[in-house]
Amino acid sequence: MIELEKMDEDLRGIHEASMTFLEQTGMMFHHPKVIEIMKQEGIRVEGKTAFFTREQVMAWVSKAPSQFKVYARNPKYDIEVGGDHVELCPGSGSPFVCEIDGNKHAALMSDYVTFLKLYHQSNYYNTNGGIMVQPTDIGKSTIPMMLYATLNYSDKVIITGTGSTEEVEKLMDMLGLVFGSKEALLEKPRCITIVNTNTPLQFDTTMLETMMVFNRYKQPVVIAAASMAGTTAPVTLAAAIALTNAEVLAGIAVAQMINEGTPVIYGCQSTTSDMKTGSIAIGAPEGALCYQYAARMAKSYGLPCRGGGSVTDAKTLSVQAGYESMLTLLASYSAKTNLIFQSAGIMESYNSMCYEKFIVDLEIIGMVKRYLGGVKVNADTLAVEVVQEVGIAGQFLTSEHTMQHCRKEPFLPDISLRGAVTGDLTESLLDNIRKQKEKMLASYCKPEISTDIQDRLVNYLLGCGLDRILIEGLKN
Image 1: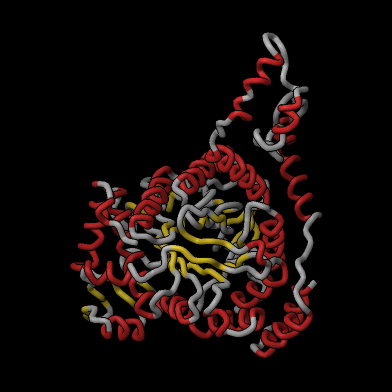
Image 2 (image 1 turned 120 degrees about the vertical axis):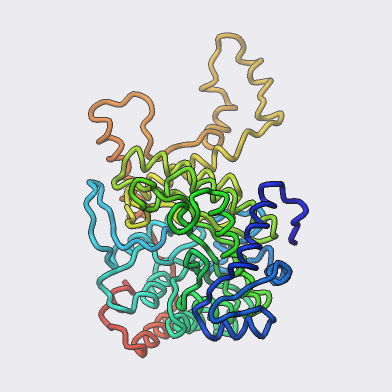
């Protein structure tokens, strides 16, 4: 339910600026079919630029569901999207993998599979897949091959990539083979993708084709803007947030015109630009503020929301990577952002994924969850009788009350150094990180997928002209 009257003065100002952008400046859509759909719905279009009245925007946005469910292959990983539900989602879009020493290598399919295993092993995640890294060794068939790998190595809620109509239809074909039919997808959403705007005020052809296919099958789409204050958006955050808001609302409205009631998520990955270099600054406090405001705007419109996670501009695993990632994740989590992408492993302004940072980010996630869990106050936790029993100058380490709560009250770190430590402290921490990564990979157990479905997927991919050796390599 849209509740504009409940917006505070700041949110109202952002909303009004966004409406002015859409009414007077307009937004460009680089796809003739989308242009035609908008014209049929009474939207004023000049060339490729659409001009929305605020009444039109709000009427169409109100048709989007405020909450919906996405179904995993394994029902225990089904997720609710919307309300105050918070779900973590993988990193996305990195062409490189960063080593512990800062050196990088072009991402390979083996890296993609390793990250699938790590995300699958973490209890913090009910989602997996997407474009965690962009493999360079499998040719142009990256989107179907990454979905095939995701289906093989995880049974959590599926994140997918984007592409042309033909490419995205292949994704739906594959999901239809796994979940009964393409028509069955209309009844149960099975995957999520991200459709990005091209700031300022544009949607490109590929993103619109992805949106149309996903909307046709009622698969959830995150419609996200990633404006950079000072370069692709005005330098002041209020204006950058208003521009983000305008772009996302226009995309959500068009999604409802394509297929009314299709599930969408209000997405924001906006931040500031570094005024010394002109580059994006994803670990900046301005990015954290953008996530906070985006979640507030989305909830005012009655929409599920997406923000960023443990993001950093650091070039190596370092103190900078730690403090930036903690800030941005805490901002999104405390705003009850429904889907938090880029939540573990991402670094170097989205250019790299890092195995070791992934492990560190899991520690950050655990700490943030514990902090936001707050303090439970009741007769048991106040422990009045325990204090009276131990009395003055006593100790609580051996009390029964401590035994009952010691594994659930305090956060128990996996890698942090506590207590007395000897030797090289940095190396001790890095050793803990390596051991945790090795432990997770050693305990990974590949989820079952029936031979029949496996054979259907292989035959489908072979029919699409994909390499048999690549396909067979991903089965094991």
